[in-house]
Image (cartoon, rainbow, N blue to C red; front, top):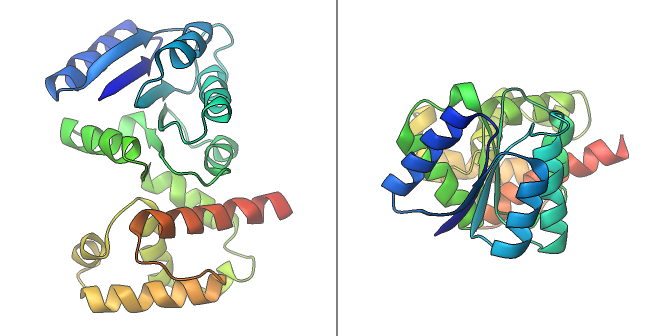
Length: 219
């Protein structure tokens, strides 16, 4: 699996390269500026991009804007964003097209190699890998709106875990409930949100995230 990595801090970039290579990823390019990232994504066509939000020369949202432009040029390009903070606008923009293959992790909340590598693989396969804090803030933004306000506390917990890309079995284990209970909560959630149910884990997560994004656009 070929990866383009963008991170301006040398030690972090070198550490990520070594970690990915240890798990049999091929590093197509490891760059440290926005312009270099744009060129690498256009020329190398990687299987997944791992991108820091803030890159030279602007140190604002350079990395994410390059990744978004690359996804417009190549719809569905898998992008895993690394950030120091939850930036709701960036997360929503990344999710806006609903085509999958997206992730948003907070750097200081990635606690081990397995967690990070699982996120890269999930995104590369077209899934989602969203930090719980990112999802929580996206949900909180609309918690007073209908029909989001109709969700029970437990349904909100289930939806947050769904949005992280977890299966019903994983959600059941996390919440110490049965898979049947999770399936019931999931059905209730989709009913309240006016979304068609789906057995495809990735599509159901994307449906929820797309709903949240539409609500932001309409607000």
